[in-house]
Amino acid sequence: MANIKSAIKRVRTNEDHRLQNQSVKTDVRSHIKKVEALVANKDVDNAKAALQTAVKKIDKAVQKGLIHQNKGNRQKSRLAQQVNGLSA
Image: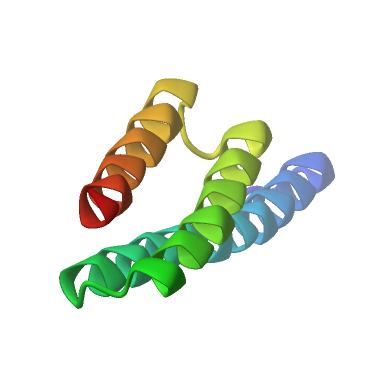
């Protein structure tokens, strides 16, 4: 354990940020899985609505720097392809 006061504070803030980031990432994954489940059940309307919320969550995670921009774009693209494949 760190002995210096600023190092002790840094350890505490790092842990707080890690927990916050973890919850955001979990939320993003949950929304992605929700869209994929709706696509598997061929529920077009709910899948489109879920896609919108998932895209918002992904964009927010990219904005916060939790996931790389390219990864976020790739996830959004793949989800959109799946949902658009239902309507076609």
